[in-house]
Structures are given as structure tokens and as C-alpha cells.
Image 1 (spheres, rainbow, N blue to C red):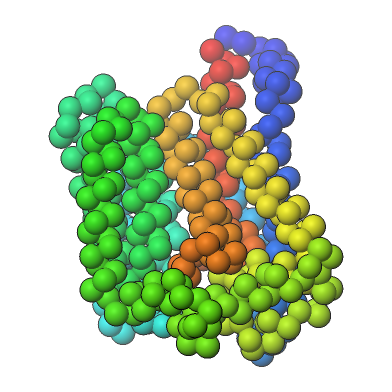
Image 2 (image 1 turned 180 degrees about the vertical axis):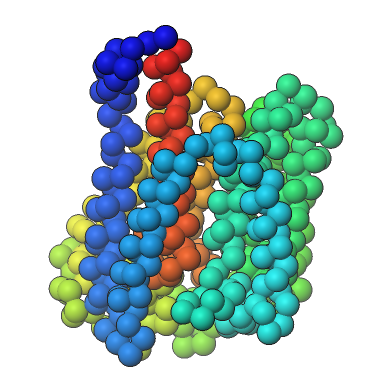
Length: 376
């Protein structure tokens, strides 16, 4: 048995060798501060809704959620992962029921809580990264086609089917990509995953073609200039904002796009307002902050020896990484509009809360791995 003093010395000695982990919360704080600053400007046209005040309240709640998951025993979360999974499925079903699920812009993604709206898919991400890795780690030694692929794919199919019913195509694709990546990291055959991905892509394209609204959005994106006043109005205005700031920006509060020109300026297109008001230099800085955050976290995941914790950490990082890249690509006109928020910057209470919970869980995984390595 190691003495307390010796254990502490070895613990801090180990931390000193893994300074990358300290970069994770520092980058998040930097991004979130700039997000709150630009949100104060982006919400000038929506003062009656008190978006900035609401986000500040949600930020306080999110910090509580962060520290809660940072110190909760991972073993307890792992043992209750099945319960989190079942509760997520129940919520995803409830949100589809009329008069229970709140419909906004033709999609049922929210439950009304009275003081705010709760986006169910955000909780489902946390439930997924706790339950799916547990399912995979249980079958770590059994790489048969059934246990190593079909059973996990069945559970992924439940999530994606319910998300498609909302409909939320962007989040559906996000869940599927994360699941395929985790299956690959768990040792699943790349050939099987490519075949499954190809089939899923074909089905996804067919579903989009059968949906007139989504198909019109794709066609508008392919002919952006001709549809800039109709189907691609939001994306066009976002591009104007992104490109009009120049190197140094127009200055805080001087942006024009959030003044009723750019729909959802405070949510999906917050980065467009950021680039317009603070310019390319700050935009590059924020992109570098995200990149540094992801690199630091990816580096630390490869010091994790537990298969379950390794998959949990990678699941969190994949969700945040892909979501950030997609949002940047949409704002820059590289992808059609997806309705996917920018982590730690976009307005949204449930999104901010579960992003902080995810980071708390990620740092908890790192912390637990450090202690276990020191003790062993």
C-alpha cells in the first residue's frame, strides 16, 4: 500500500508529464468567453428574449453539471449506463408524441419544461457515449459478426431511427459516424464498416430524395447564387457576414447580419457573426483554440488503458469534433445548412449543459486513468 504522501508525489509527477490535459479546460474557457461576448452582440436584435441573460443562467447550470460529472465515480456511471440508455430512448419517443414534443420549423426535437425547451438529442449523446462503449467493451474478446457488429448496430439503429422521425438528419448522421468510428476503434473489420457505411449512405440519400424540404435545401445549396433570396437565403446571408468582416472585423456591435438579415444568427450561424465583427484574425484564433483542444484531448486518450474508458473518451471527442467541423463547413458554404450548433459558442441551454457535462466526463476519464496508473 502506497502512503498518502508517496501517492500524491507520484500523482503530480505523472500530471507534470501530461500537461496536455490542462489545455482542455483552458481552451474551453477561452472559446466560451468569446462566445458570450459575441452572443451579446448577436442578440441585439432579440433583446426582448433576453438571450444573453438566459445563456448566462444556463452557463452557471452547466458549470455545476461539469463539476458533478468531473467527480462522480466512473464505475457508478458505467453500472447505470443501461438505465441512461433506456431513459434516452423513452425521451426520444416522447418527443415524437403531439402535444408533448415541441415542434419548431417542422421538427419535433424539444420537450417544453416551462422555463425553457429541452433538446432531447443532447441528452441522448451522453447516454450513447456511456452505454455504447460498455456494449462494445463487453464483447471485446468476442469479435464474432453477431456480437462484435450486429448487436451494437441494432442499438445504433434505434437511436438513428428515432432521430430520423423527428426529423433531425444532421444529428442522425452524427450518431452513425461516431458509432462507426467506435466500432473501428474496438477492432471491427474496416471492410464490414465500409460496406455498412455505403449501404447507410445510399439509404440516407433515398430518404432525403423522398423529403421535399430536404431535397429543396440540397438543390438550393448546389445553385447558391440563384436561390439566395429563397431556399439558400440563410446560407447566403451567413456567407456575406463571414466575408464582410475582413482581417480586423467591423467591431463589436457593428455587424449588420444579425439585424434581421441572418436568421438564427445567435445559434447555428454564430461563427458568421463572430467573423463579421472580429475579423479573420480572431476567427483563425478561435479555430486554433478548437484545434488545440481536440489535439490535446486526442493525445490524452491514448494514455487510457481501460477499453471502456478509452471508448467513452473517444466517443465524446468524436461528437464534439465532428459537430464543430460541420458547423464551420456550413458557415463557410462548404456544406448545406444542417441545424447543428457550434459547441460552447452557439446559444442553447440544453446544448451548452450537455457539452459541459461531456467535458466533465472526459476529464473524469483522464483523472481516473491517471490515478489508476499511479497506483499500479
